Length: 242
Image 1 (cartoon, helix red, strand yellow):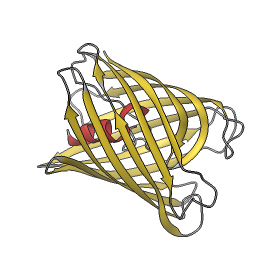
Image 2: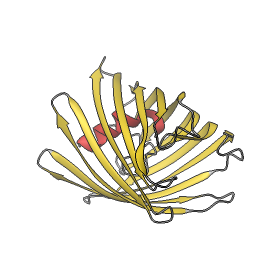
Image 3: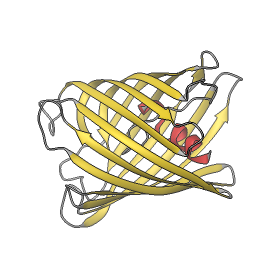
């Protein structure tokens, strides 16, 4: 599916349903699994979510499951930033639970999803619905997503363009650029939120396991640049199908 290709390209090693799970990284590897499940673990130098730094030196784990013969995927993501940021000095853990329904219409792949953001160590949980589509435009994968958070009472929109290059039978280079726009999300009013650039290098260790190092940069735009710095960050993840 183009959605899967775009998620790999845009998020790489974030282990990023972002499109479908609030920009968390769903690392999707080749569908050779018997049970339809993918288990991922990873490390990020910074926990950047929608242009904002929520902590550093983060360890993540994630499980995703594709229901057999149904266009429904469910999953859970857990992040543990081991040091804080200026916005989140307590570097609290985060648990995301999500479900996505996807369907192809000719050359367009569409999806509808729900995500619950939970904070086991304290903090206000939020609930979000999202929808979007992905397609190919020439050599590029293009995706547009829209997310509404019921508790924040705001919208977040993002557009991502990506391209994948096969370097060898085992290694690919995925490049992506995205821009986002917020409407009463985190701050009052509407404006462009941030730009995200990502380069990842998925390495197929076996037909079931993929190691993905990545490097990325996020650049704050008018909605958040008064209180959020630009950041260059990176990390690595390991995803296994079973």
